[in-house]
Image (cartoon, rainbow, N blue to C red; front, side):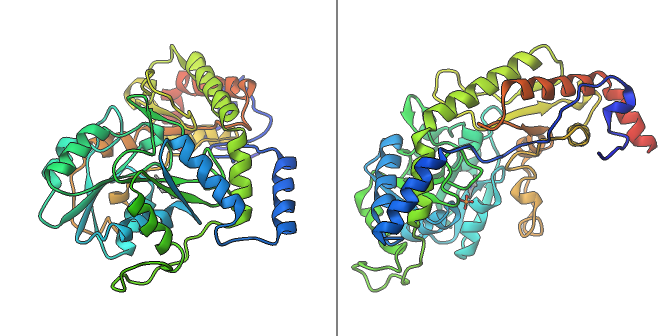
Length: 397
Ligand SMILES: *Cc1c(COP(=O)(O)O)cnc(C)c1O
């Protein structure tokens, strides 16, 4: 095992972890059910093009999201592009910088200009007041992101957008199964996008979906994701291939079969982390709204360097040396800190910059259990207890 100045063994008596633990490990699925579905698809000889498994998957996602329409896609990035194309967006699109790069990339790929807006530091999501300020005559939409599963201020964002006569959409890649004011994520704005990438809470190997209550919008998306077939207007710029395969739907359905168990497991993991780190000064949990349903896929903590004596990055180094492969969360660094956006027009996003420098995503999901979390927490406590000394050693080294 790698030894360096961040190895807590140097301080003696640190709690050991036997196997490496990773943030963003795929959740487990019932293999028998998955293989049965794949066998059925092979026997059926219907492997793509809106087959029965994709249709069943779409129905179940629509039900979970409480919406009338779901169009499953090959991934969420393509779903975002389809959504922007179907809405005929042009010019500028307002997005948070604190998101996975795909939100901004999808716009840029279509020749749109992503305009980054700051967040509400409590929710990590777009601040409606900042959005109102950022709207110009060139703005054609607002795309909010329900960061780490915490829904955006959908009512206020919807009002701001409506006041300017532009649509609001949501990248809900983290938020399937979550609610805002008791209403399921999926039904907000004109449409929302889910991701079913292997590391997301519902996993289709690769996959995405657009969900909406707007039937006409759903028809346009459905046509566009299948080469534009069935589009009435010839002025449409053709279409693309954004279809989900039957194999992905088989995985997605099998993942959905145990979705409630997964959320229960995630919830228990989250509660264990909270209990084990409750009285540790300088480590705080990124807040969920206890009144709402949540999928608890991500366990995000903020590290206060002044209190712990450890920077976020040094705590990550310590965890890695101890075989805990925690990560910076999705959205850290923020989009405007990454190319190609970093070289664009400079923006001031103080709340975004502060938050992304402080956060860690801890290992969770169905492959991580209570005993492992106890050990991770023991390592964090030990690291914080020796925080100043670890930092001093790192400086010397
Ligand atoms: C994962 C993710 C995406 C992209 O999803 P893919 O299915 O991998 O294309 C988009 N937005 C956010 C916020 C994500 O976390």
